Image 1 (tube, rainbow, N blue to C red):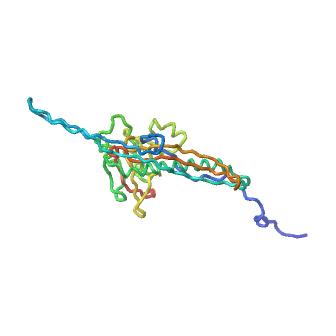
Image 2 (spheres, one colour):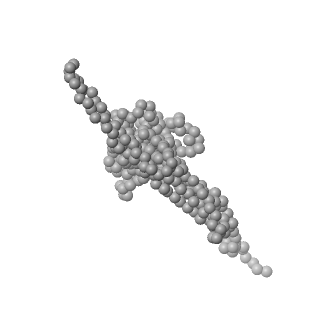
Image 3 (spheres, rainbow, N blue to C red):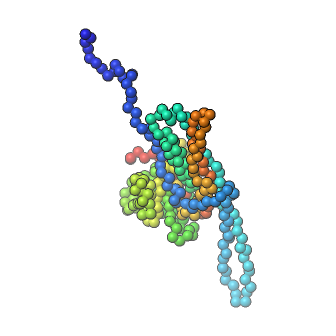
Length: 293
């Protein structure tokens, strides 16, 4: 008879692990498409928009002849669609052995990656808005005065009456605003037209509203500057930025029998850029990680 205590460590190397379902990469939801002008067409031709010059009135005498004014137009902006692709190959051996639903999970990740790609591209336009610039990067901590100044500048650009005004900020730009002990900070609420979205995306940092401005808080806005982090958000109406989709995102499964695998080929054709750039104001402010102080 062998005496002694029986320990788990004696079998730890041979027992099975408890394997949970694998987790997808964490991604923020696509939120910026709804804030800009969406266009579509067939083919890959460049889309251009032109703008007329302004006409003016001047005082003349009763018998004076009126000098004619030229009424011309110049190119304002253009969008040239580009092809974006991604692909995953999954062997039959992997699919037969893996405990997760690999085809379904890979398809979901391709879709999420596509949505994030578009949002990042849209956010990249905020630094190109020409209506004005508030702040100077890392040295400027955002305040509600920045917000109201941007709104005033935007309205002064003669934006179309009734157009919704969006203010897109990185979460690290937004935090100093929402934490401010002011009537402005206390009165932020979810925009009614986005309440259905909030049911599916329970994230208060998505689309709050203040004084007619709809705030869109997204980490698709890049932080630059290294040790002196800054972000370029934007306040704009939908006409300021456009996306031109020529082929929506799709996934095309394809079998490669000689290699015993399934290919998931996905692509989208589109371009995004400023459209009426004067209908937007850049908010260039500090984007340091909040530390609670």
